[in-house]
Length: 266
Image (cartoon, rainbow, N blue to C red):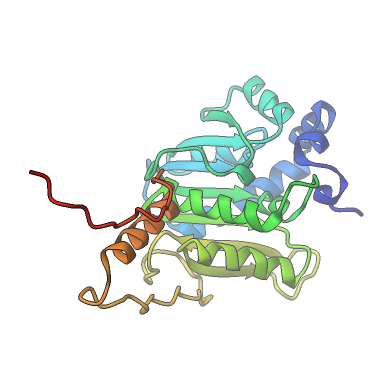
């Protein structure tokens, strides 16, 4: 059986017919609910959190978010047909048509947590000549980090094609500043094995995520900071600008005038 992401782009694959068939399948409803509940179990969230559902589709996971913990949620998806089904079903969350590979289009610190079920593996595919999976992953995780409050949590269930794809996704997440790692359920069962990328926008503590006996790899602390007394004005400005870019802020372009010492005015 071919993987959907290798068949066609998601907005093409999930057309009107496929979206209705996907949503009406009792088997898919059961699997979606099971994986969403597992993601929430790993995150151990307090009630009434503001959650982003990435690749929300027709709102199957959103229904669980509304029922479990009475969370307020926003769903984003690239498929107009999937979102149309969600509107017909009158789901509780707000909906946004957007491509996650172009970044998460929300203000910094908007969400307490993020879930994504069976979606982020699509980022590893190049559907057009101009699509670069590495750049799409970087935009996704950089903007995702910015959209979360500090200490915000992420649980992404996904279906990797191979080990290389797992390393690609994990590497992009950590390059954007996330701490965390991979949780694998039913590892010995090839058919039922499930992968969950569990992240925090900050350092992981034992109370942050319900590990269920599974060790999460911590993000190493950055120790390459220069001594402030040795750092030039230009180096300081460039370091701060790079930090703001990673947080999704707009900053002025670099030039040879950056950090230039100005003459005193009379």
